[in-house]
Length: 191
Image 1 (cartoon, one colour):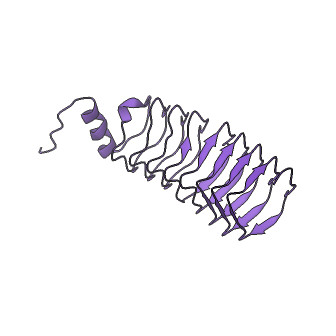
Image 2 (image 1 turned 30 degrees about the horizontal axis):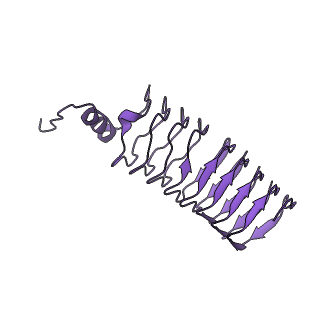
Image 3 (image 1 turned 45 degrees about the vertical axis):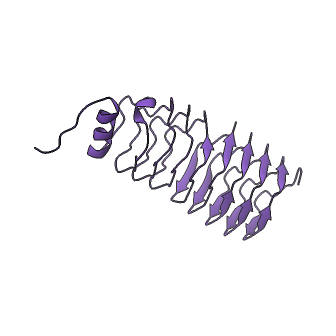
């Protein structure tokens, strides 16, 4: 599908599988319960769009803009974002397990409670982001800028925090213990 103008459209619970969308304008469009599986979005615009309980599973987003988009309770499992505009954006819960968002500007986004297990956030800038209560188990944070980010209450099992940049990062006790152990400390909590 090429060059479609879906500006402001209410797409509802549409279902697409294996479709390539090129230069499609989805600005201010809304979906509710929509399903996009193994779709490619190339040079598309999701600006100011709203997606509720929709699924974008194993999708490939290339040079796509999500400026001011809202995702509420959505599944983006296994999707890949490359050269995309991802801020400002509103994300309320959902499952983004196994997504690849490498080298992206995600500064100051509120990703509280988001399931980012096994996500690849390498080389991304999450400075000032809020990840309170997020599930980051097994996520790759190689050279990720987490300066000033809030990771309190986040699940960090299998995360190499030592590979990330952590200046003024907010950690709870469990996160601080994990970081100390990654740096070779022998943590004794018996006292």
